[in-house]
Amino acid sequence: MYQSSCDSAQGERGGDDSDRMVGDRWFPRQAPDPQRRTIQRAIAAAAQWDRTAHRIATEDPTALHVCGVDAALEDAHLVAAAVCVRDGQVCERAIARRPLRFPYIPGMLAFREGAAMAAAVGAIDGPIDCLIVDGNGRIHPRQAGTAVHLGVASGLPAIGVAKRLLCGRPLGALRGRPARTCTPIVADATVEAEPGRVIGMAVQTRQYPTVPRIQPVYVSPGHRMTVATAAQLITTLADGTRSPPPIREADAAATAARR
Image (cartoon, rainbow, N blue to C red; front, side, top):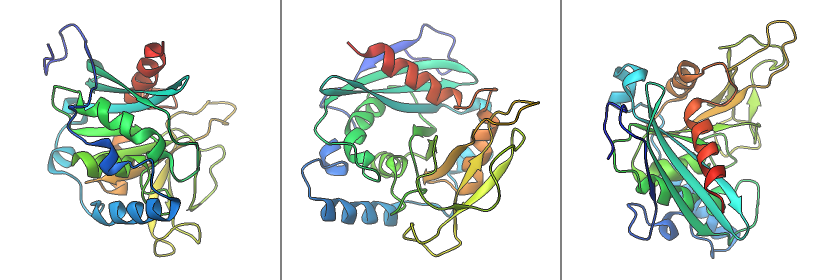
């Protein structure tokens, strides 16, 4: 069983159709693209980005139950993993599988991976203070990346962490920056937002001391989170690798669960 102290044996569960979030409501696979874009705009309108959930804003980050979420391909299925971490220790894992019924389309990744991710998150028994999703939040053409979908669907605070910049414009050069540097990403013509509005941060979680060439990760809020708090939390969680530990754990769990 799960224990909040995280000092017990690590639990692992599988997601099923009784999960807390109903995937087809939030991540419909059969809708035409114009309808999906309408859904994304409605989800973005429901997201809260002007303030951070009280516990995230006031609690010591090491005391938070942070849940990393990622997915991996398994033949004709997607395997999603949710891994809850507290103070560097894995508390609980959950795995969910869903048929792969949607092609890869940039800007529509939530409709491909979201139902499986939602099922994995819904299968976690213990508390979750924040989701950290391998994917985008507000850094998205309609400000509706996978982290926004998952956050709004679950009601949980959520952050998206992506390895490449999908849209928007950085306010400054990104090459050769020292670790812990944060550079704002602002909306431009590729984003349905007021031009110049800050929608995320390029966060330098790691850098080589002599040959600075490691790329940043692109952090943006999904739900119940500001840009500044999202970047601060990811910077705090960074442990010398490019990906934050919760996402790294989720990636490993999803990969290991493939049959």
